[in-house]
Length: 140
Image 1: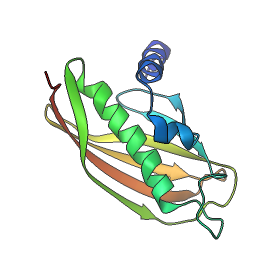
Image 2 (image 1 turned 135 degrees about the horizontal axis):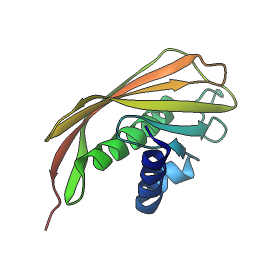
Image 3 (image 1 turned 90 degrees about the vertical axis):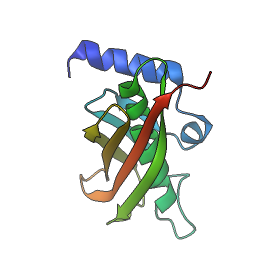
């Protein structure tokens, strides 16, 4: 991805906004484009009672990246909406920041599939999320 493309993608994402939930969770986009998007999220404030990053927080991070990436791919006048999401948690983050990298598995005219890999600060995979979005025309 060129620097110009990355800048345009980040501007698009910033203008559109992530939504209230992602903002409350401290999710921040650091790179944004159709072929690759990256975001970070703090563990603090997003834990379950025993101090582990909540599994649902991983999913919110993954869906935020995957859905936004699908909407960028969909283009003007079209809307991508999630129809399926799944996550496999393989490690528990307990502090610091996790980083999610979203890449497309399929970019079609009516459907997208993205994989989101979430790593802790040591580069260890904590969760793998897959999201499928349906693309449709914006409602009138």
